[in-house]
Length: 300
Image 1 (cartoon, rainbow, N blue to C red):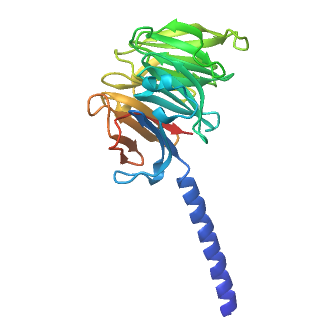
Image 2 (cartoon, rainbow, N blue to C red):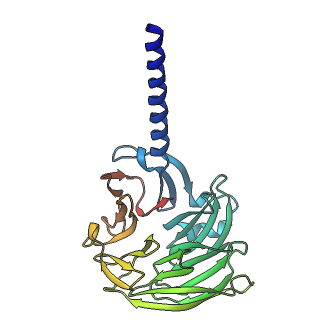
Image 3 (cartoon, rainbow, N blue to C red):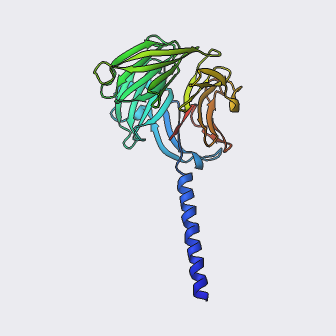
């Protein structure tokens, strides 16, 4: 009888350990990218708190292997960063005037371009890159590049105070955000050496100061402005308050998982930067005191 009970206990213990390990693996699977100054780091969200950070990846933009030394001065103030190509590469742009694509494993530079006051970057089909440029000499526009042809603009369009760019695969459209305008572009001649964009629609924002643009689902965009955060319904083309943080001013970046009701964002607390990443459901604050953090992105 003792043998039987011990056997049953062993089975229960094994099942418990399997569930525990599985939960821990799931818990440890979410990564976030934060950037500021000349640093980009990838953190384990679930194991980072207001007192400790679990850093999975760290990059100083002045030390990127294979990047021309002449690009260092253009990468001093990181402001957007996105994981692309199944997390194999990281896109980074800087308001100092540069954009790079790096290999995550080796950190080696795969692409670079001078992009005045770049504020947002997006990876597009066909190994193309879109960059939104804010106010600057040769800025205030949207630019398209080929990742295999560094520092060569393939297409450009005017966009005053360009701050956001997001590709929506389900709709086959590129959405961009400017000072007071949201736009939707389709891809033109995309398989040719000279691709372009065609403006399909544009909408005036409820208020000025368009800052961040994020697709929370195939039917909804989130838009932060100077004083508020909005949602845009893509089915009926209407703006409305994004209630979780609708009246939060100076939101610099926002992520929202509609199914999990999980919100992650940054906001300007010390001028335009912060030393915190905020989360709701679960509610917590991740402290990053060593850099002036601008945006947070979530690796999905």
